[in-house]
Image 1: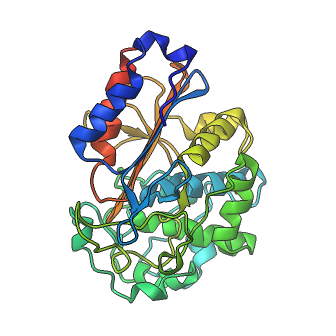
Image 2: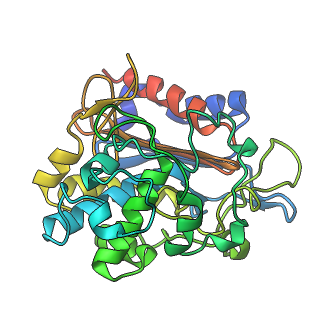
Length: 347
């Protein structure tokens, strides 16, 4: 359903029709939610969560977030920093010991958070442009726990000296998960639930196994048509770099809790949304676990995997947020861009 309310009047009551038109043009399946001035004004579900059984996507469907999980990892790590359980200048080596010997001894937790560690990446997006082309070096069912990821993290030479520049790193965020788990003594998936999901009231968010998805979780499809799903293309259970499942309502609860200081303190929030790196000239900036608009105070999380697409954007000063989630490999980003342009008309 789409629910225009009072705060959407400046869009002349056209918000629901505009979103439907965008979705139809893109051929999108999934869920769209838009909040204006803190109120949900548009909530729409499209297409099928399970094509074989003709089960429709609903507002309560759980979708994979792919790299959107990196924000959860960063929040978990920063909660440990706040509690003096971990330091930003702590080296990865101080926790890893003899494991992953190709990681430079100087790499710090902060550099891993900022994608400035220079470590070799098991899924290097500078090399792999099509996620469906990527083949994991171990059977996907053997990647269920954080420690099991050592098998794919190992053996990748350093790309550049620590701190030299920004280079987006999936492996770096799994290393962060490994550090958090070893330091806390709590399995990483449980630690995220304790430090992020519970304080934010996110009851439908968890690292689900792709080979035993519950009834409300959408199956990720590789193509616009057909039944081929992503179960052989991704680790059976995600980790620090991606793979958590959530709902649109939970994502908006995350934004509220984040900026209210209920996950980490307001001072830490300010640190996490402070621009530290630019991905490339004229591109988005990056803070600690969150993407930042090139100008202004827009904060976002993005995710793209085979059969998964996710974009969520929050503009604190302009009082709007939106989330786009899909169970196809394509569609979330173009829908998100056009919704963002639509909301820009609010001034």
